[in-house]
Structure formats: C-alpha cells, structure tokens
Image (cartoon, rainbow, N blue to C red; front, side, top):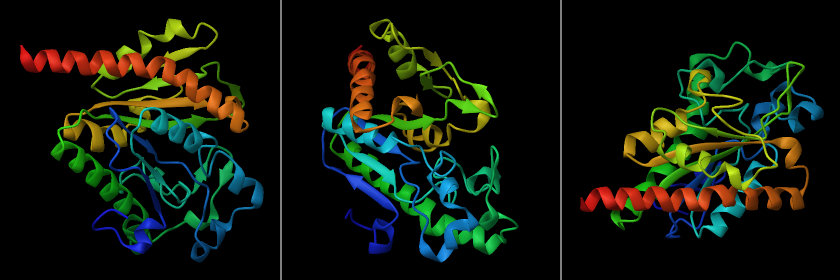
Length: 263
C-alpha cells in the first residue's frame, strides 16, 4: 500500500506495480461495478449493476495486460462509476448521475451536498491521491511517463450503432494521440478514430487534464468497443492490438521529447 493511503483507501483503489519503470502509467477509472454495501445497490437491479452503465466491461483486463507488457504501473478504481465517476470533477453532475442512457439510478436521486461530499472523500480523493503519488515518485526517479487511460464503450447508444472500434481521445495536448493514429495502418481491419465516440466537449478528458496536462505528461484516452472484449481471450487479443499502436507511438514521442531537451 503506497505511503499515505489507509486500508479504507485501498478498498476503493487498486495499485499494481507502482515501482515499475516502463514508459507509461495506465489508469482505469471504470474498472469495477462494485457498489459498497452501505449504498444499498443504489436501488439498481442485477441487470443494471452488470451493464455498461455501472462500469467499463473488459477495460481493467486490457489495462492490466498493457501495464504488464510495458512493465508499467496501473491505478484502477475498485468502485462503480455510479457511486462516483473518477473521470469527473466533484462539481460535475455526471460524477454521480441519477440517469445514464435509459437506466435510472434511484440511489443518486436528490443527493444532498453532504452525501456528494462523502463520495468525493471516500472514492475520488483516494483515487486521485494514488495517481498523484505514482506520478510524483516517477518524477523523482526521472522516468519518462505517458498517462494512458483505458475505457470501453457500448456498441449501441440510444439505439444508434457505433462504427468506431477503437477511439483515440485527447484534450489540447494531441502529441500521443497523433502518434498513435499515425500507426493505425498497422490495424487495417479495425475502425480507429480520433475523439470518437466521445471527445473533450463531452467532459470525458478530466483525468487527462488533472493527471496529465497539469504535470506536463504525454497523455491519451483509449476507448475500445466492449463487444470486442467479451471474454478473457478477446481482452488479451485487443490488448495486443492496442500495443501494436501504442508501443511505436510511445517510442516516437519519448524520442521527440529527448531530442527537444538536448536541442
């Protein structure tokens, strides 16, 4: 358990190999659909708790494969994003949504300020503290670090089929996204798109801004359509496909940065 985190914090945050020295730090903010008992399931039925509304199916497995392949650390949330979405700031209503697509979340309806603050303290702050500690340690060790957040998305949203299979999302720093998209020809069988199915205007780049841009780190968010992550074999296969794009992109970006530093 990293210094400064309590046992309660470790129950809501998973930290894998924080001392690993690979070129990236992988985040998975929607890794789990776990709802702590004292939230009484948020009033959801079993189907809703298993749905994409509660988490990003397959995302944690892909993030873990990528981290292990890159000999890099991973930080993941252990709590459903319906309790608190760690990719949203506390002031955002979508941090504790009372409805997502066609699913109502009764346990999030009419939350008081105190109830919202409790979730920020219990879930969001430990997650952010964990990410910050890993970044600080890597900076102290003079390690190159790219922030890579891993997500999955539903193939059908409000009845509309999504053609995108791998989304490469960025905020105002496009360096790593550009480098990844430049490698998309390596996956000719995949539909790889920029800022699809979401983009900065949808409020999905909070982690990139907070943990990436604020520290001057290369950063990117990778979204994978979840019908491509249906089982362990598919998850490992997609992780390998992502690595086909990510490895050369990371190498090119870090080489560019090193060259700029010595110019």
